[in-house]
Length: 79
Image (cartoon, rainbow, N blue to C red; front, side, top):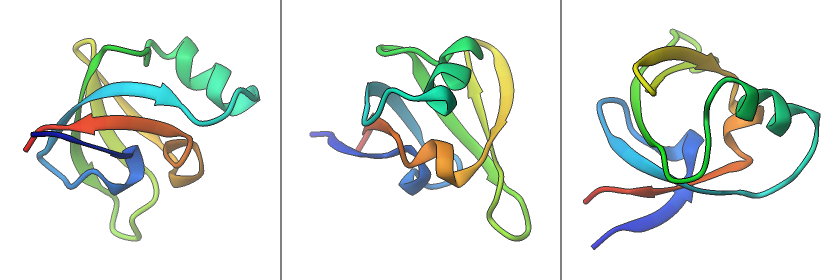
């Protein structure tokens, strides 16, 4: 069974599938321009020492995202 959570709540070394976006604004557009799209698998690699930003791997690319951006991305976490 899987649950839908915010991307910022995904634990390091965990995988999920991008489910949807909670908002449509400039920051979400920037995230989508990085290749983060609905249906893509995303892996939380690690968090910086102060927990912001966090590194994720999506489409074979590592990206760093701020918590404020990750709060708008909903993912279906693997159990």
